[in-house]
Image (cartoon, rainbow, N blue to C red):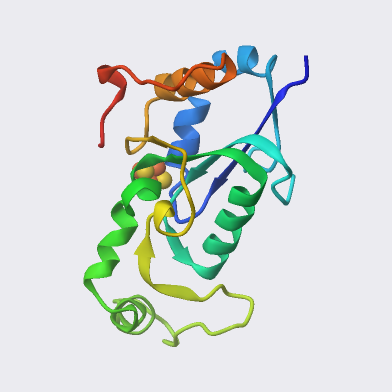
Amino acid sequence: MSKVRVATTSLAGCFGCHMSFLDMDERIVGLLEHVEFSRSPINDIKHCEPCDIGLVEGALCNADNVHVLREFRENCKILIAVGACAINGGVPAMRNHFSLQECLEEAFLDEIGVDNPHIPNDVEIPLLLSKVHPLHEVVKVDYYLPGCPPPADAFVKILTDLLEGREPALPKNMLHYD
Ligand code: SF4
């Protein structure tokens, strides 16, 4: 039987959701009997190839985040928003209380210890969005895996449900938002 292809990425995230994914520990070995990975921070594949499940951590903070998210949506049959940042913007969305200019000035001009203050403007740097957005404001999301981060058991449960052809359903003890 061919393996289920899974891609993962971190947009404006902290990689904490990926760390929690890896907290599956030895259960990852069992998972690898049924799953192979497309683009993911845990390998060297640069683009999301057509696959069955995409796990996306992090909110949308900049133009590159939007580009990567669209690539995942085009290539993944099932797209899962993983963690608080992907679901509602999470901690990064706290900057939405300020203008982008205020944030840039605070970080690059006014903060204590800033040497040679200037706001970076190299063309290689992705442009920041004026506000931070959750994934569902830009693409259709199929499932949400809550938590900051979601527990490893929740990754196991949602992936097992999907691999076995069931509608994912998390028990209460795996559902939290902190
Ligand atoms: S939801 Fe929490 S753990 Fe996951 S990327 Fe956001 S801040 Fe990090």
